[in-house]
Amino acid sequence: MSLLRLFAILLVGALPVLAQPQKYTIAVIPKGTTHEYWKSIHAGAVKAQRELAAAGIAVDLIWKGPLKEDDREQQVQVVENFIGRRVDGIVLAPLDNRALVAPVETAVRGKIPVVIIDSGLVSSAPISYVATDNREGGRIAARNLGRLLGGKGSAIMLRYAIGSASTEEREEGFLEVMQHDFPGIKLLSTDQHAGATRDSAKRTAENLLSRYGAQVNGVFACNESSAAGMLLALRDAGLAGGKVKFVAFDSGETLNAGLKAGDVQGLVVQNPLNMGYLGVKSVVAVLRGEKVPARIDTGVGFVTNDNFDDPAMADIVHPPLDQYLK
Ligand code: BDR
Picture (cartoon, helix red, strand yellow):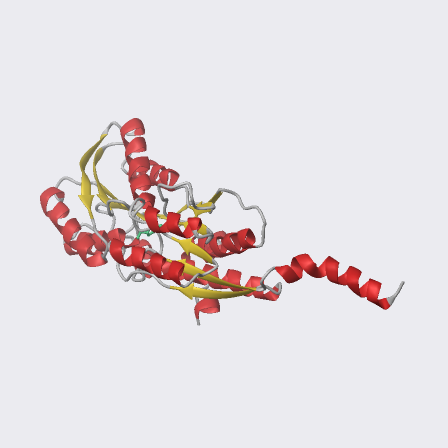
């Protein structure tokens, strides 16, 4: 066989790989950049970037989100800017399940694949949804708060924000189990929203405790900032230390410390590092012509002082952020 013929055969065989760009620009857009939670998402994205690089696939990762999780206009603008920059793919945690539909559908029409992480979007355009089963997370919160109250007494649920699909599903799951399995527990308030910051959450929680503090036996707050604000308000009102049973959602320095101090009785926890990791891996896989599942469930668990130090919980309650974000 002539050298020329051999070379031609080798070249044709290599074409599929040579035809694919070996460098992708991926935008990762969190709901906001003030909560600890998003650092784990970012770390997971970097973990995927490093793993892909080791496989010879270079990913230029751009991390950019609104400062606050109620700034719909800013998150829409961030998505639109990345469309204008013709990034290869987008990984997005939409802070509003409807306000982000239009820019996402514009991206997909422009052949920029979008993977949604953390919180749902009312659209079939994204190629995958990588998140916690948040409704089940809310059910887990209710089952444990109901158990802690012995099935009787009164409780408050502190909501987060209208349009935040992840937390609205938790709130629905919590109410479903409370109303179905714990008829002996009176729900004093279930319609107050904490808003996007720990400070706004604290103010809402202070108002609730000034009104119901003498009656309330248990509280559920459905995300990191709402729970941190409620924790501060319970302490200020002298209702911490287990006087009021407190089940929170998410982990993080403040909530982990609250658990250790006995001011929080349980944390419903997620795996944001894995969400960021699988979000980036999925969008690159699609760009390389591979199939990805439409829905990836990244898991949900319940942490108390009894299992906080379990090795299985280590990456959840103490995510290795420095390994990826330094
Ligand atoms: C976000 O924080 C996390 O609990 C959630 O997954 C949610 O999307 C809201 O601040």
